[in-house]
Length: 75
Image 1: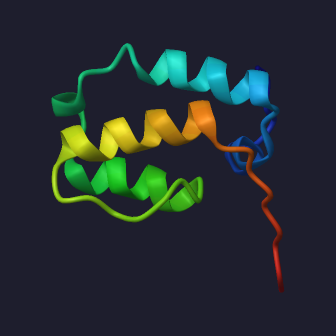
Image 2: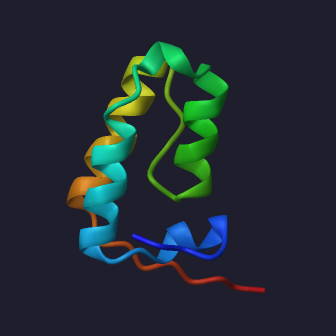
Image 3: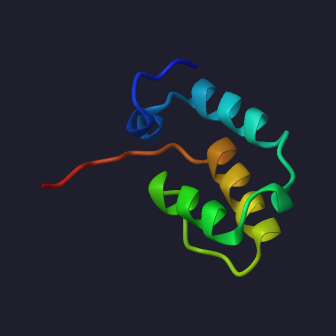
């Protein structure tokens, strides 16, 4: 998984999303704030904001592993 810009993460292939999920799984939810986990969810269009860091991390990982994204930038 190689991206030139952070915004390219929105366009990862299925394999790329799986690899990103595996990388993020190495981090404990407590290593980042709830705001940071929710920010990642929002940025990657991975669902709605959550109430705890643990649930937010789990949602992000689940979405990365199970969802085929179609990101359309409407200007």
